[in-house]
View (cartoon, rainbow, N blue to C red):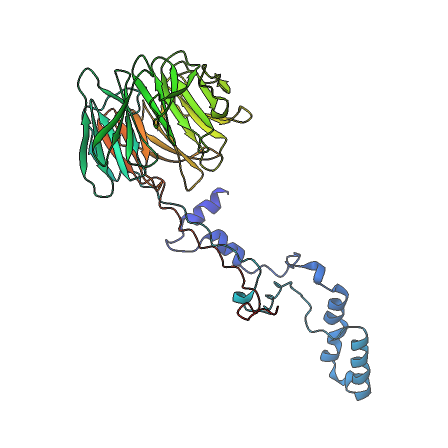
Length: 454
């Protein structure tokens, strides 16, 4: 734009219309030899238009020349024969009319469009925060678990506390002596009543939380502390600092039924698959093993099914996918910082994501294709990922120290996290599951109410 036009635009009063817009609306000079804007030339009949603009107007300009009735009749027949009996010169294409529904929509069997699914709101702050004094800040332990009876167990030093999520009440289950404690792991049995407690002195105790009494003590499994536990029906699997993994049948007196040897350092992660056929174990030796229950032997140590060496730090965080039985997620420590996804049938690493910080725990959403991870330095956050794209859905902050432990409520909606800052926080991160629609009833057989003719 030149200087003259700039000076003229500066003299416009405030609130006036845009000069460029006004230029488009101004009427053009009739002497300008410019073409008209015709939206759709393909629908035009230029010959007919030229006739109507030249020859067709002669009759109107000279009415005396066309006053004969015979000429009017002849012109009318000629126009009909030549398809010239039209009134519109410029034709525009309009949208096609809406189809007429022969049947009401409610009686139609055609599938109807589903309404767009609303994006779930994820609160960025914890719903509740509880004090957890004397919580041991140890990456290799497992001190938090949420049972099927909606009771959360947490070990603080040498004491195991139970928090009833339904009533909000807290009770003390047991406090161990110094020669036995501190507690190094807790894990609920599938019934939600019995709980296994691993101790620093290599023993494992079974307790009845309802009767508040000890049932038995498992000895001889390990030579040092038991940092990881995992139930598979009546089989309790224990992992120790000695690198051994032991399957214990809690129904019989001689409880040791299988022993897995493959880790060279402490076993800090244990998880059974939903089918109960495969066990995943992670250790401080950066190894991830997959064990198959069907090839286990009680006479000699069982050989692993798969040995995965891709992580470059301790593997503690393990989570089996609830919607794909052979999909396992694993997380590495501070020197690795990666979440890896494995197909345990083909041993293929499907994906690896660098999270930027130590991965302490992993939990799958039971209702959506999402994965939640807890982390250490520097943000000490919980990160929600969309699977399989691994796009970040949300990051939850509030802890001031690494989030070592996570547990999921029985309904899958709430997650509890415990950190080295000695706090226990509850997050409504997974949302309320959708109400399952009842299955449609089968169409009754015609005349089913009448007696059959034999």
